[in-house]
Amino acid sequence: MRVRLGYVAIALNLPKVTSSSNVTYTFYRKLATEEEKLNKLKKVSYSNIMDLKKILEYNVENQIHFYRITSALIPLATHPDVNWDYRKIFATDFKLIGDYIKTNKMRVDTHPDQFNVINSVDENVVENTKRNLLFHSNLFKDMDYPLGKMVLHVGSVAGGKEAALKRFVKNFNTFPQEITSKLILENDDKTFTAVETLKLCKELDVPMVLDVHHHRCNNDGYTIEEILPDIMDTWRNQLLPPKLHFSSPKDGPYDRKHADFIDAKDFIEFIEICKKIDKDIDIMLEAKKKDLALFDLADSIKALRKNWKWIDTSTFEL
Image (cartoon, rainbow, N blue to C red; front, top):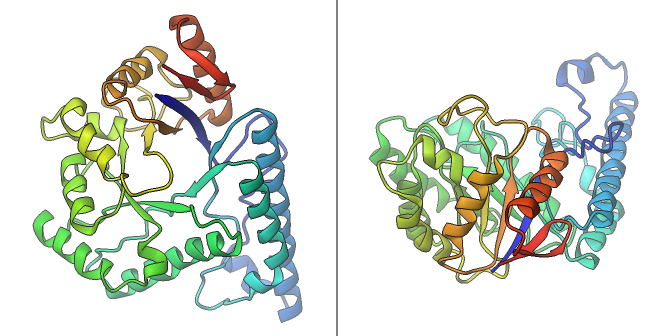
């Protein structure tokens, strides 16, 4: 079984690099002319794209093959009152980013923000969600990166879980294939459990991401051992291995907030459960210290499991 570790968005070893610089709509509206507005959007977006390239180069230099791209790469990309043609303006830049990802055999994905709710009872929210998810889908298209996926939670529980799940299926089936083919669903720490999310994934035939910490906070009494084989099986027709999320609680075992680093003993215990299934997996570390947490975890594993074989900085076998 081969395990690859990844991290989210920000490389803390690159302190002056960010791919998430923003332009608020309030600031945008205060600019005097349309030319000023467009130039500001272009300047910030270009800076974000160039810094994304720097982060990807840093990942390659440090043998990190799995990475989550920020959802804030292009300011006001989906704002209905802005509607600027960033895709045409940065077409070459997106293609170069995609070529770099593919040349270096990296896996990248995105995680649209929590206000994207496919099963909302508010039609405006559903339409905004469609628009936002299309941004992510178009990003993968413009990068010519067909393996790109976006992680989403099930969302609203308005009207009760049964009604909410039916609403998700109904709305999902109205979304364009360019969105639905990219979606993977994740259990959450308050409402939809891993078992409920798994059932939905089976019905829609989409892969599921197990968030281990969310499962510990919200699980209906099911153990990871009981559900993990079926979750892995949702990836059976995918070109990439199953992906999972792992974080450690900040304060106490059921604290929903993420800690700065990963509890190595807890992580190893989980990996040894995965070994029983013995499939390659990619694990996104959702720790506050980002890349630093990845390096720290790798060092701890090497000290605690000296017989595990390391392929490179972020990849090991057992």
